[in-house]
Image 1 (cartoon, rainbow, N blue to C red):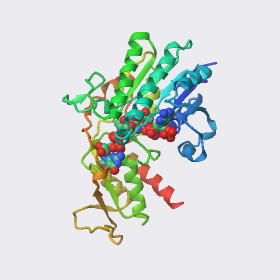
Image 2: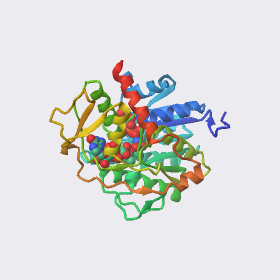
Image 3: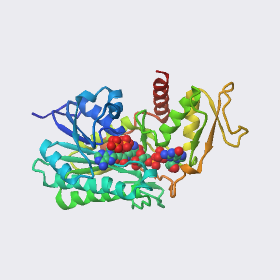
Length: 350
Ligand code: NDP
Ligand code: GDR
């Protein structure tokens, strides 16, 4: 039997989370379990203990029912959804690195674009009307002239990842309009956490700075330091995803904090929190770069980390999420960085 909790939860509901071993999948599994839901965790390939480190960190691994789920395998997608009949489907699986998408455009599109479409198609024919959440991205905006972007903006992505996410986003709208399928989207700006993959710039920075502080690494090499991002905590973003599927009608929501910070500023803030001052290449520090007596560390720029195309992230109007969901991020950027640095030191000191 299904009951609704006072917190708007869905006690007893079955929730399928694709990409459950990823950052957002792990936090969302924890949230759904806290709401009394049964969590089906979609995973491609074998579930090894090493791959469950995020769920382990949150203490929920044993409560997730793992199911084989590969976005590149349409018959498997259909079979698993029809077999388990989830009430809510959060499609979080994707090749999620914009940088990697330049090297793997076809695989990125097949999983993130066609994979999402196959899920919508099963939901369209399902006789129990599941609700679907699709993880869209701020990358769908691309380079635009509007000052503040919103759900109604014209989309103009130019990265393979952005184009893939736009395909799935437009398909979600098409399924709503054409078939009445309950598919909502979150146009998600960057969200980070201690559970972020190491190939993303925030985690790369916090992990490297902790290693440098403990003498395990000499130098942090980055790409575009002046790139600006609207960074929030992933824990707050999975709450927004949850709230979006609680609404009576499917819709699109921009989810962001509204605060832009450069990569360089993020690194400086993280270093301050790690207890030292950053010195940058060309500021009188030699190639080896680290002087532990003064606690100074060097960060250099390595062209290998530049992208062939790296558009500025647009500023955004978040009023729809504030008004219709009552959502705004609970954690500040400072809290996020504190959380990430504390995690790095706890990992390296054991
Ligand atoms: P992660 O990269 O941490 O997680 C993505 C998960 O998808 C991984 O567990 C990965 O598994 C899985 N996956 C990849 N390809 C497939 C496939 N073919 N079939 C099944 N599973 C697959 O991403 P996040 O948790 O950070 O992001 C969640 C979603 O939100 C993604 O769709 C991302 O594009 C989107 N998003 C994220 C933002 C962010 O800032 N975090 C912002 C905007 C959108 P494996 O270990 O096997 O690779
Ligand atoms: P992004 O995140 O591309 O915004 O995609 P990422 O952390 O990879 O890059 C952010 C910005 O930092 C610059 N940068 C570097 N990036 C990486 N990864 N490594 C570096 O060394 C480095 N140096 C500078 C990048 O050029 C870029 O401008 C994330 C993902 O979570 C997507 O899935 C999601 O859709 C978008 O956020 C919104």
